[in-house]
Image (tube, rainbow, N blue to C red):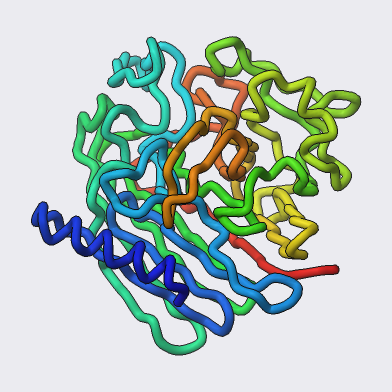
Length: 348
């Protein structure tokens, strides 16, 4: 483990001991890849992978103590990730009013979503060919305004190709919307390497769900071809960036069926690192973090706009208010299962 990571972990443990919070740091290691996680928000706090020369770097943005974590960095987001228009929806004839935390809207589950709570550790095994950890959380009926009791889990597993993530949820007594997201900010050059605008990105989504000024979807589904959102072929992020005033923050309608499929591939050309993201979900939010400014990150490195990118596989934003979008309603007796795989490799 690098000196930076060791300092980072020590800082978190020290913070926890002072506050008596039940936070812990858990390492998974397989070959050259290692990942550190915490049960605060079931969060990825570091992930080390080699570059084309075998040099390891931490490719996850983060902070030196849990108290400094903000804006969902590395966390599991829910009960419903992304935005809900007017912080309200109607389900089976019942109108639900949610807690607002972005103007009149709800974003990423509300003021105290799943990223802000302490999860339980159900299983932790850092041995063998598939080291893994499972975090669980129980969300009560009425949590942030959402109906019904919900049991949630996320399992992180290091596999031969990279990091597997499985998010599951069971509605216990009422139908409820569920849209869980893994919200890591990635920089394949290393978290302290500068911006991601020179990264080459390919997104396997021929359409997007366009948004209004408050980032709520219009309900339309439009083609990306001939627009700055077209990443169907590998494209440098900076190529059309001037045409996106606030940076990329849009949901892609992924091509392919319901099974595990490739959503995106990112190539950081200086290091040669490549990350392929696979998912069974219908959408993916591509976000280039334009809002970051003077954030003091790990080891004191100061993050600036576009210091990282997010590839948040998901259901469509505000699906509870758009019947033409894939449903996010989970009924008692059924299980929500969101699968992801981050595959890491290198090329010259």
